[in-house]
Each structure stands twice: as C-alpha cells, then as structure tokens.
Length: 330
Ligand code: ASP
Image (cartoon, rainbow, N blue to C red; front, side):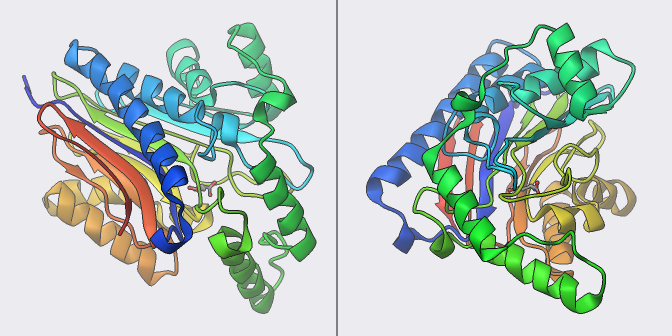
C-alpha cells in the first residue's frame, strides 16, 4: 500500500505574464486553485479514491468563472458554449468522456457517469446531452455560462477572423490558421481576464497507489464546425495507468492530438523504463519540436508529481500531505 497521496491541478497554460496581471486578479486565480486543491485533498486524506478526488477537484475548477471549463467556458463562433471532458481510472483503465455537450453544469460529472454507467468511452453532441437528461445531472441555462469577458473575447476573435484552422486546404492556409490561433491565445489581444488557453485538469494518487486523471474544457474561442480538441480523447489530453502515470494536458489541442501527448508520457515510462519527470520532460520537448504550446501535469503511483510546460505560464497547483503550492508563471 502506498502511503503517499498526491494531487496536482492546472487551470490552463498560455501567455500568462506577470506584467499583465493585476494583484486582485492574481489573488482570485490563486484562491480558485487553492479551493480546488483543498476539495481534492479532503477526499484523499479520508482514504477516498483518486477517481472521486479528480472528479470533485475538476468540478470545483469548472464552477470557477475564470477558467475555461464549465461556467467560464469560452464561446463558439455561434455564441454557444460547447464543452469537452474526460476522466480515466488508472487501476481499471476504464474511461469516460463527453464532447460537444451544452448546458451541462459539470461536464466532468457526466464523463464519470459514462465511465460508471455505460459500456462506452466517449459520447458526443446530442446523444451526450440526452444521456445527461437520463442521468439527471444538473443542467444550467445559457445565462449561467455567460461571462462578459468571454463574450468580448468572442466578438474580438470574430472581428479579427481568428481561429480558422478549419480552412486547411493548403500549407499557407494552415500556417495562417495556426498564427491566427496563436494570436487568439495572446492576452494582449483580449481583455485582462482572459489571459490563457484555459482548460482545467487534475491528476491524483490515492492512499492505495491508484491513479486517476480528469480534464475539462470549453475548447477554443470562436471554434467552428463542431471542433473537438484533445481534452475528451483518451491518450491525447488525458490518460491514466497505475503501471506508469496519470496525465492531464492543456494547450493548443491540435498539437497535443498529433503528438498523442498524454499517452506519450506513459509510453516513455513503460517502454524506456525512465522515471516520470524525465518522461514528461521528453514529451513536452517533443511537443515543442512540432510547434505545440502548452503543458501538462502528471503523477505516478509513488506520489511523484511533475508539471512541465513550454508556454509563458501555466496556472497550476500541487498538494501532498506535507506541502501545498500554487504557481502561475515560469
Ligand atoms: N487543449 C484545449 C483544446 O484544444 C484547450 C486548452 O487546453 O486550453 O480544446
């Protein structure tokens, strides 16, 4: 039995610069992260499972208006909030995910129900929403998801015509699209409250050495055509296996999808026999080499935590029985 419980969280990575942050806003971000950490720690300290800990921790982050998940989700091109979430159990390798869901207050709760109550792994769109109704999960009206800064972010993105990766007919257009997305993530092109890529995640190791990972997101501002990112896809934005590690990613999803980042960390540990910290660093180096921006949090069954990223900052926190730390910048 492992005695070392551990929990790590993120609230998104991106161009998060101290010079662009006000003390009030920073304090608000920090308290959102600390509340989430406490929620998860309480469960783990009582001997609760890593699955319960990551689910409830992510619920707390989804309820916090500044992160791009649940309540604070960004707007699509059509002014809607379409959310993705995924949870994975490292002991059983069972996973549950939802993509493209609307008006579900806590998408991670719905993802957990997919894992617990269905024989499937991923439900999307209308069907996922029907499942939400059947499971009687808490729904919220559009007003709950409306945040002024997100809406302004959309208006600006629409005006500038950014996030156009869908028009990828030839190479120059792909590059234009990538540059446009990059710009959309730049805090200097948005209001002060929307300074990051967003997305939230949690990874945990419980007292029995069982691992779990959970990730939830509103995706990308001004996304179109039913775009789904890395978050709800097993092994891309989220992965857990007791034999190696639990991983939750955040960043420009299309690159994490091409790099299969979450599974890449676990695979490096499994195939190369290297420790968590080295494996995660190699995965982020690879992501960097193909032009991807973002980071990840990961934990192994000994309770070791690592949180590498290649962006200017990543909202992140870690907690064990002996330490609690919250960080934002590099
Ligand atoms: N990875 C998420 C996506 O591409 C975005 C993020 O992490 O901020 O949907």
